[in-house]
Length: 278
Image (tube, rainbow, N blue to C red; front, side, top):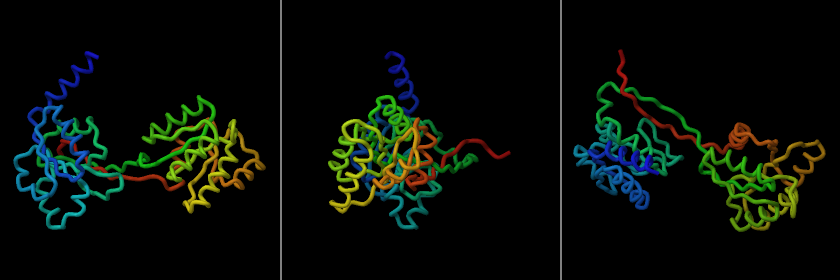
């Protein structure tokens, strides 16, 4: 405990001279960002529109909501370029924002700490831009039905590493109830086939019935199975399953599955270093 508190104090000291202009319309997130920055020792001024950029010269860092940037007229965005080195854009995963330094929402304390430690005018000192494309899955809502505690924990850990927080069920009956209660609001269902109370094939059939009766769009259902004989595979397909994931489940297999289903989202992030060209 002492070590953590000492580290937090040191990090706050590093940013005590930082002044931040925060321009965004998301009130709740602005309050959270302001609280984190204040804890680090930074001074924050909040605004809700880009007209406040007229006082940009007073601030070491400028945080701008991605939607404000995207909705701004071309002339206004062109004017923002003069402050490019001070601006970080608060971007959602689906925002199409190029050539700006981005902080992905929800903004974390570690991301803010990294930003606060940057030198304000590094870009004018021969800074190099690095454009990276990040694959994200944290927008997904996933329902998992698996009766084995170990297997369920493995799947939860794999999805957690992909920043997916799944809804976990121990049998098909629980999964069917969860699907109905959520109004089918899942992007994916991972369904074990052999479970007590209600097996995965029966649960899949019931989910498909719910979709038909309620006019819901079809959610991909992927079978979790250690072995699939041809006749079993056909039975799963006939029940309404769309794909198969072999046990033990591996992270790379899950990532490939999500990519094959077109569930990836990408964010292009521009970051900088201070190395000069020789």
